[in-house]
Image (cartoon, rainbow, N blue to C red; front, top):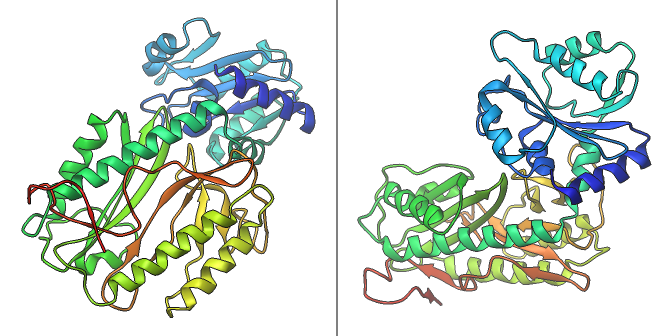
Length: 390
């Protein structure tokens, strides 16, 4: 188990009067244990959980199919393994919790992850226990990153950044979006990622679509290309988006891009401990309006084990709480993305980076490429180095 994360949970239990916290989602299992159980995100009934008690004891609950992986990653950790095709996992979990002295305890549980049927059986098996929402506690803990998490997110940011930049250097008119995807995924793995998520390749008229994968569309001169990928290690992910052009910029693209770059630096200047998430968002929307560009509901968000985490630089800084606001704090990591999907000129543009909130302001984590100017596709095919065009 990750000692620093366990200690954070123990402090949170003391604050909230809990006797234990159970992490059952793939994200919070990885947060506590330091790795992802491979099939848990794919097969929901293959429960894997970490258990942390108020006095700092730890244990693992896992399915037999993944027992060897759990044993290899945490060889000395007490573990209870349930049989996928013969056990009721909730009865096994209840027995494990009773063995830890938690039969009549106040237990924090991720209510937004455990299926209702499983929860009902767990309650029936533990009538003396009281289960309470742990997801807001865990979400809050995850907002403030440890030094280890910051270093990993910085590495992931540069992997995504370099993977995209190197890809755009070798594709040109006549290549397809599938060619972009092929280069990009190879690059992500060769640069050290274990996995990737949310591959977006949107070129030409498809660049107005927010979250689309690659198609067989062929690049042509004058295309705008939006390319985004999230590189992943140990469940952590960092996403970067770059916008490029093929050959030459279409009408208004240079002006709109320069405006989005100004937005980027204005946001970076405003990001610091104590800053209002809503005020940063409102300033961004006012900036977009100067070019009559349509507003979006957020310009940034926390990131780490989820693609989107609190806080949001948006209309609702705290997810699910309309009208809320939240202050930024030191060691938060944000994905911030000045963008406009529908510019009104037949293309969309996006400049997404990773930003660390420091004691005095902010620090850019994704800094491999020069993104102040539009990236020019095909520079490697033309015998040159990766470069940008004014």
